[in-house]
Every structure is written in structure tokens, then in C-alpha cells.
Image 1 (cartoon, one colour):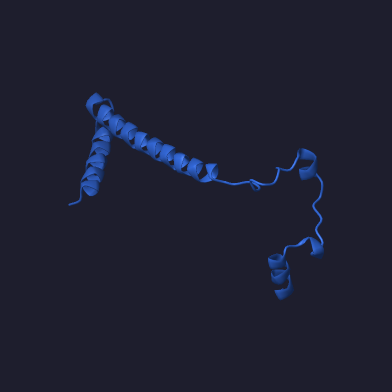
Image 2 (cartoon, rainbow, N blue to C red):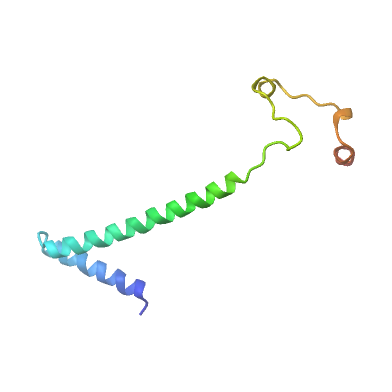
Length: 97
């Protein structure tokens, strides 16, 4: 019998006992303790996931080191590009299409 299955059976048994004895504080306390432990595990897992996401997004690179970043006005204007503005590698990709 796996520990998870044994824990599940024990929780189901406590729930059945609580239905028969609704004011039994020992059962209520045990079920509450288990619920708190589960929620703490979920919160810790969410914190770990948020840290991993933050690591991924903190590595994002915008622009290049040798060129200046675009200003707000440049970002708001519509970008237009002609065939002559493309680099040789971009032109070869465009020609293949």
C-alpha cells in the first residue's frame, strides 16, 4: 500500500467519522491540519513556479548592445520596411517565399 493511498483512506475515514460526530474537535483539528499542510505545499509550489518564470523573463534581451533603444514616439509610429532595408540573409529568406 502506497503512503498516498493510505493517507487518502485515512482522510476518508476521518470524514466519515466527522459526519457521525460533527462536534468532535479532534477530528476537526486533524482535518484542518491536513488541509493547511496541503495549501502550504500548493503555495510553496506556486512560489517556486513564479521564481522560475521570473528567471526566464529576466533573461529577455531587447535590442542590441551597439544600437540605442527605440524612443516612445518611434514605438508608436507604424514600422515600414522596404526590400532594400533588409539584410542579405533576410533577402534570401524573402526570395525563397
